[in-house]
Image 1 (cartoon, rainbow, N blue to C red):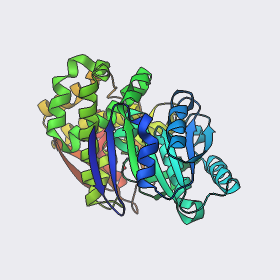
Image 2: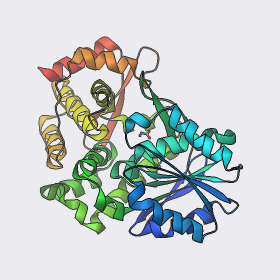
Image 3: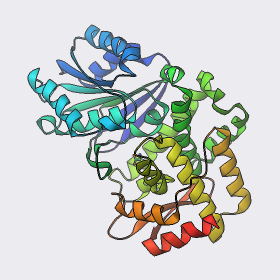
Length: 360
Ligand code: GLY
């Protein structure tokens, strides 16, 4: 098992390893000794697989367990689901020392975290991510929230968890396409900040998503990503600077995702977004062609796309509506060399020119 400490407005550990769900109750008890009640938030795909194990472990450790299981999918990431969670907790008489537990992927973690951050002005949350994407990114760092019809993650709060429990055995049950989209976020860390991770992924590229069956390798990869994310969070918890580099590929990726009405998975859109930015960097001369083909080659090796038919005009229009813009300027994340990223401020005209150059 790998233990990674995150020192932010709250200090907590991320535990990554095999078989951790069965001891999740013990870990919850350690980080939340005074809790009597817990609310396990999960969804219709994940609950049948893992909820019973977590419930049994929690009960063995003296918790009174309540559940909120929503319909799987981004469409549920709204205020009605949050109100449902608040309602269960209010009716069961939850107090400030009780606990919310997020069991599932990124949507579950974001929503459970947001419900916890607001109920009684804030109660503790433990994150138990079950998807690769949630293990390496969403569950660590305290971003929580819901979508509005106008856009993704438009309402939310920074609310750090008390612990993150990552049972890598959960990766074995993920559908191929869900594992694959998680690899986009893994590759992102390699590009923006981690040459060792790049070498590890490149060295295993011929196996493609077959790496998921290699337990030791997956624990190592997830652990490396978590350490990268912890490093970023500890430097910029509230997303005013370096944390924005985690949005590599996301500026255009979010627009592609929203324009598909969220039918295209997040990680697939991030991979496309990275591919589009790589081509634009080559066109403007800030990334050399050999480095770019190594990057594009790695994305493709893990079964991810690097292109999309979105026009530069649509990409800029969508990006200007995204919450991540500050004033009328966009912070676009560029990688000039594998392992090194840059935050470049661009106004819409500059961004349009940049994207058009990559398309030519
Ligand atoms: N998922 C990006 C972040 O946590 O900042």
